[in-house]
Length: 422
Ligand code: HOZ
Image 1 (cartoon, rainbow, N blue to C red):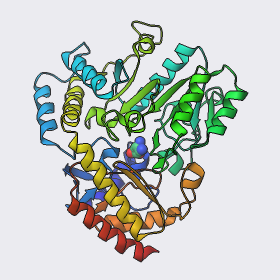
Image 2: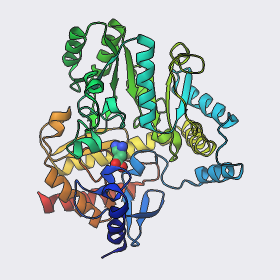
Image 3: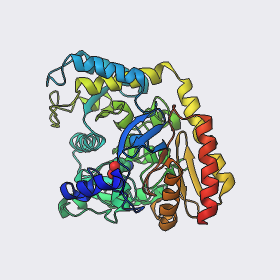
């Protein structure tokens, strides 16, 4: 038994499923997860001394690659000054100014500790501001694990066969209305049937938790128009797309402006950070200026801010990074399309291969993918030194540390593996 397998056996005795977050348990693909010891650039190294080209990138934060020297230096420097104060710091001001300058349409931001927390707080803000209770989400979109979002959820909830989680009260679930991704009529119907009751629509502007599913032209603008007509707020969950598709995220990339935006992952540079942001008019409803309560001892933590500030500074000073990762994402996606008839969805540096020849444009079509084939594909890729998401309903992430040689090698392996499993 290798060291990863041994660690997994120990872990299962002391942690549910042997993990602290479900997808990494490899339940969807079989076998013991590889326990990761270290990472550098586009590579991760496991406890058994094997190395992999990594397309998970910690599920998105590692846009600059693992253990980026400049970020490490900033973090080490911040550590010398103390780990947490529970009091206001200059770093928080710098972070807020940087994020606002980068994104453009937001004028205030509140830092929290995860994407889940950001979404939970954004929904509370939407309800507090509008005085309405109901929210619309899309089947297969995943917005973290706050109760109201665990209805027809994507990511691990979908993979695990529990998109409607146990433990969510009926009262909470009934206020979450479900629409279909890319189907504006399903949204209009919910508004018609719940007149003046809907506080907000929350959407991943590129869905990345049912695999990557792209918004069709007009879908996001349609949501914008419907929300405006019904005096409801539009929330873009940019936990994955924020600072990835462009510095201004999907809102900039697609040219559609939400009312509230949530962030996570890249904004923390690999540290546990989330944030939500909006106009001053909306954000001043948050405590202590307003009556929508939200707080956090570790929010704006100085070490996390140091990592986030350095990451956003690098991204804003070097726009060529976006050209590079988007170019490599396209090369990889185009290369895969040439060697398979399976559906390949791609935008910027995000992509997914589905084991179906159907077009994948929502949760139901994503579920036409042959999950057994994905499991075989994943394991053979792993054996050949390529680390992809251990579940179909996730994204592949390309970072600035990947090279054209990495992409060429990955395409060679994909071609070989697809021949073996088709
Ligand atoms: N939210 C991540 C996937 N979209 C985490 C997966 C996991 O580690 O379970």
